[in-house]
Every structure is written in structure tokens, then in C-alpha cells.
Length: 200
Image (cartoon, rainbow, N blue to C red; front, side):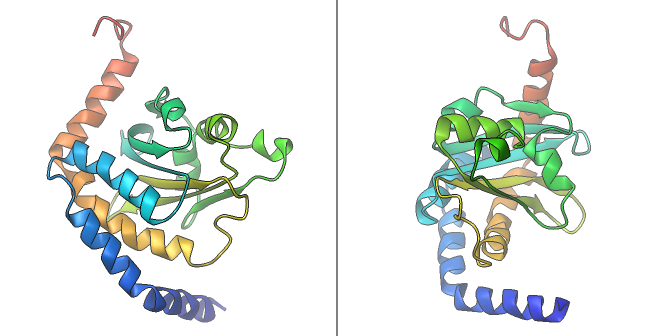
């Protein structure tokens, strides 16, 4: 069964190789400044993949703090109100518990109530009904998460999505590994912890 699944994934990627190359080329052409590049990347991915939402989260403190680095689409302004997330209830923490990806399909208010709080905000304010998150990672470490969302609850039922998004996440590694991005994550985490946050 595992062999059949791998063959299926390989076939999906083979058929969509041209599409993967095109998007990776576009990601390679974004602004060289990493923080700007990440914002350009979420907009590019959102539009090219025809999804309603896209975000990139950076992980810090051995994957116990999650910093929103870029968001675009439905509900982006709402998710930006929670730039630093800590604890096991958030989608990034849930993703780390999964073997490959985090996928939610919401068809009722009862299911929505079980969503991580960041996805609940996107469900309520962005009218998103399906979510797919994958880790942005090297062989040795997980640097962050790439999330996309759609208004259609069946948005990510096709096997194409998870391997495709995994390939595209490779185009984000350079920006996430950059020292400027790492410093930004630490700064945002420190500001969020400070009682003088408003003053800063």
C-alpha cells in the first residue's frame, strides 16, 4: 500500500512538473529582502494556486513559538491581530503532531468549534471552509509552516495538493533561513512578551 501511495504521488508530481517549475521560478524572482519576499510570496501563491488565503509562519524556541510572517487573502487582517502564537492549541502546533500535513474540512458549526483558534478566526471572518498546512523544513529542522485556505469545504480533497505544496515550500527556505527573518521572529516574540508592548 505504501508503495502504491508513493507511485501515486510521483505520478501527480510528474504530471504537474511544469506547474511546479513555473511557480518556483516566480518565487525565485521575488524581492531579495526576505521579509518583503515572504509577503510577495504569499500573494503570488494565493493567486497562482487560486486559493482564498495563504500564510507563512516562522517557528522559534525549538518549535514552541509561532510567528506570523506574512498573510494574504480572506481573513488576513484578522489573523494579523495574532502575530505571535504559543501553546498546543494553534494550527502550527497541531501540524507538528502530524506525519506530513494538517488538513481540515469544515461542513458544520460543530466542526468549526474544533478548529485551532487561528483557523476559527479565518472560518468566521474569512469564510474559509478548508485548510491545508505543511511544514517548511530541511532534513534537519522545521523552520515554519505554509498554510492555504479555500471557501469550499472540498477545496483540498484531491491528492494533488499536499505533494504540490510540499515542493513549492522549498522555494521559501532561503527567506526563512535568513538571519533577518530569524531576528524578526525573536523581536516579535520579545515584543509580544513585553508589558511595555504598546510603548515599544
